[in-house]
Image (cartoon, rainbow, N blue to C red; front, side):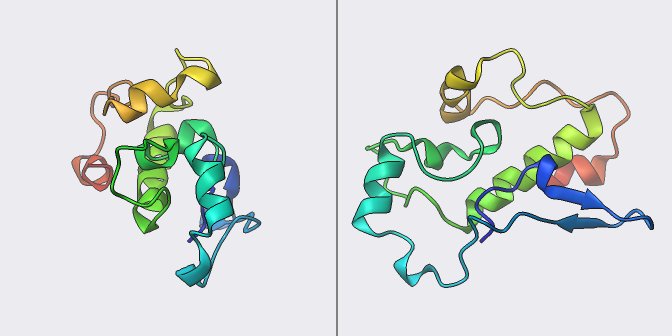
Length: 126
């Protein structure tokens, strides 16, 4: 798991291929991923990932039965990167960094896709 997937961590080669970078937070062996210390930090809203690209479960709802980080979080972040690529905007740009958690946890999505966006690409995000 990458655990901090965002547009700034995707590099484009001369042949227009995307390469994921910055594996500082990545985890290959997930058996020790949810230590008591890391769970406590994530439940306080700390932890991994950049706020605007975080999945809802990463915001540490105590009511959630899901672990605060799982493979699905990278999938959510990937969808946000695709959205950002198509729109040229950062996600939830109308919110300050400390306000982003609320719309994400409530299931809001970033602003609508641009008209004429390829349906297959939009499907990757849903």
